[in-house]
Image (cartoon, rainbow, N blue to C red; front, side, top):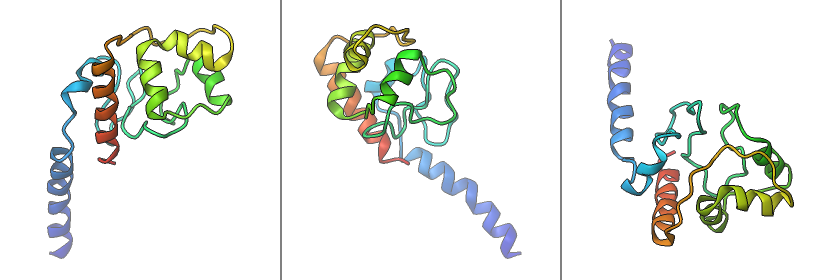
Length: 132
């Protein structure tokens, strides 16, 4: 009987945790290519971004399609600090070229030029990190 009771409470706890971690509206532009929910697998088009802040490049072990430029940046020790995320989101190709010292094939073409929107997106990523 206790086992049945325990199993019946697990979905409620998981649903509650998900409800406590809504995706910030500032990240709506990311939803097309990235998963933004804790525990969800990465999408074929991009890694899950939950927990990316202050993690090394290529932080999602389940994402297998990292670009040549991202692999090179990871090998150089790139960490997704707030400043690095701001620069990357503004112009991924230029940012990775500056990290790598050369232009390499990069998969992310999206650019968010508006600084206030980039700042809000990074703050949204920081809020998601608390949901892990």
